[in-house]
Length: 164
Image 1 (spheres, rainbow, N blue to C red):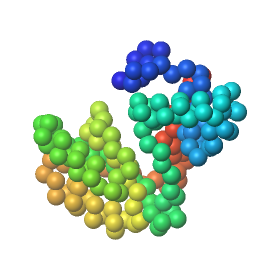
Image 2: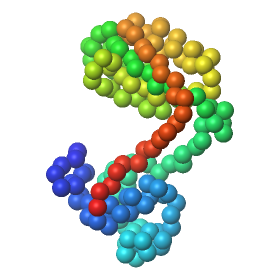
Image 3: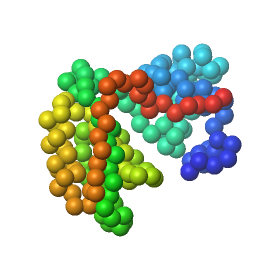
Image 4: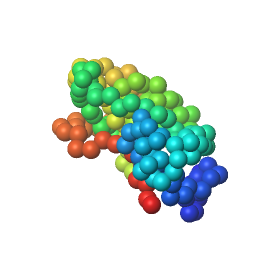
């Protein structure tokens, strides 16, 4: 839970932690020696800090970002889904179905006209049509869904802005 003055997960983030986070969000394979040189710490100090950031859940995962087009999955779709009923069990069932779908890259439970906003990565519209049948059309709690086709990825990032 985020608190005041940078408190998260029970630890306070200082300028070194924030600088390290900015660097590893760009490239988490940056050697600890190089990170240390850039932030003014020893490599062992960087290693300890990164370990603490991982243990506390501030760093949630270390991943590689794969180019979808290189795997024949160049189509990105943004979908807004409105639920018919907002009963907890029915919304949870939708949430679980979206979470289990490997083509859903992001799923947000949102306010406004829609209840969910989903980001899909698919190979083609035929694959997406099959998904719409199983996730939306056959789901009695889906009132409507609206699909937006991304013509160009202007920016795609999971980086969290780190302030000094």
